[in-house]
Amino acid sequence: MLNKLLSTSLLLSAISTPTFASDINTELKSANKSVSEKVIKWRRHLHQNPELSNREFETAKYVTKHLRSLGLEVQTGVAHTGVVAKLKGGKKGPLIALRADMDALPVKEQVDLPFASTQTAEYKGNTVGVMHACGHDNHVAILMAAAESLVKIKDQLAGDILFVFQPAEEGAPDGEEGGAELMLKEGLFKEKPEAVFGLHVTSSLNTGQIGFREGPLMASADKFTITVKGRQTHGSRPWNGVDPIVASSQIIMATQTIASRQVDVTKAPSVVSFGAINGGVRNNIIPDEVEMVGTIRTFDQEMRADIKKRLAKTAEMVAESGGAEAHVHIDHGYPVTVNDVELTKKMTPTLAGVVGKENLITTPLITGAEDFSYYALETPGMFFFLGVTPKGQDAVTAPSNHSPHFFADEKALQLGVNAMTQLVVDYLK
Image 1: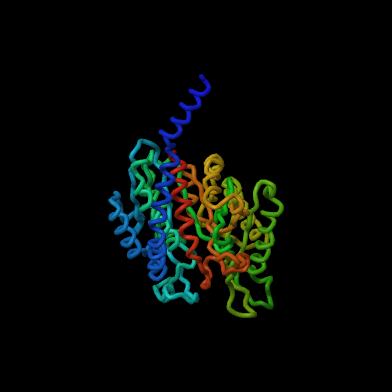
Image 2: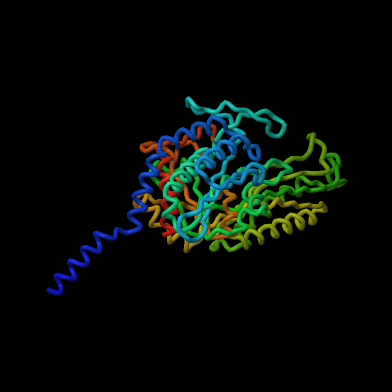
């Protein structure tokens, strides 16, 4: 009799007190479904009206109008054109941040779409085509949709959300500051969020797939310039001068041993690449000077600092050995993008729930860079990739991000909205 009473009591309890998780997830699913057509509309508008870094004026107005229509607290003009909005949940809890980047690239679109970009702008003194060749239009539309969905369930959220629409991820114009670094400098995280999430569309995965990894995900990116100074002389009498071309070639070969022989390759991979060499004007004149530019990519912050020192020392000493001088300047670029291990482990089941375990891909290390890295240095961050190559098409051969042929399958947009909003709900539970 006692067992029967207990069983009846437990059954009544289960029926009369549905779980918070099932309630909020049902409401979230409904909210996300209600924005499924809007997110495509927004993405097409943004795709047709791209703007370059630090010039996202109309994009910012478009985003701001939408966020204010949702009743959110909105701040504009952050890091030039950035837009930030805050949603206060109905229950007390932590603050978390969601980020989308807004800028396009100086690329002329070559995709046959009814909403293809025909925009042009000035870039480094030239008139160029402008295209969302990296897919940031998708990011903005997804975050606009996520904001609308989360506003609809705000009374059930145990915490607050910061929506960050960031300019200039592709890099600020010469002589300007911008991007994530400037947003933080201007106080974006004055109230520090407990976690920050971001996504990036990629043609290297198919629609329905999400890629991520714990720890280092994307490389740091530092640009360097090496100016080698010699002494001009006639090409037939090199002993009367100092040949900066020969010294430059020796520097190039010597610096390749930094990654292969001087740093611990078992700790993390690294790359030192030269992209351009300029010097001389005539076949029989040894010039005074040669300039070389290149990039350093690493997956470890300590190794990054070490390689910079080794590059400068190697260039200077090799040049000196031949009587020349080497002057090394390094523009410190984006840090390593690192997914916080604990946060990523915690939220992996959420992504698996959105796309299925079989569609969760552990991505290889990516030598490209992302300025989401700055946020992840300030607070635990998680960054993941959303596949946008249509199912049935080979993602390996699909035109890559930054290509004038880059194509994003709009069927992936809803998946992006589902992933971002579910991360919020599950984290705040």
